[in-house]
Length: 88
Image (cartoon, rainbow, N blue to C red):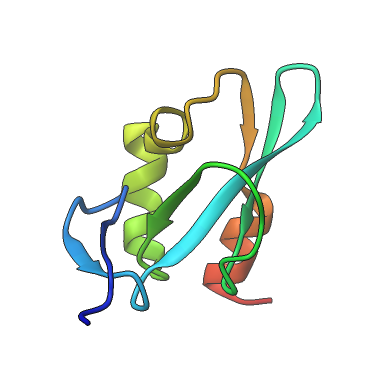
């Protein structure tokens, strides 16, 4: 059975789910969300996928793709995701 195929919210290219990083939105207040990386694919909730590269993250942020893909509105904090992709 072939691995599932997902679309990167940054570059919009289709790739195997194992090549992409799953992210979920976690509520951190009224109309405030934190985008959290989910490399083990265990967190609950609607997920979006992005290549673990700074270029795809920048494209997703510029296009405001996380809000649409995760169906959320409000303030979105991507600090934890950026740290996971760029490194410490």
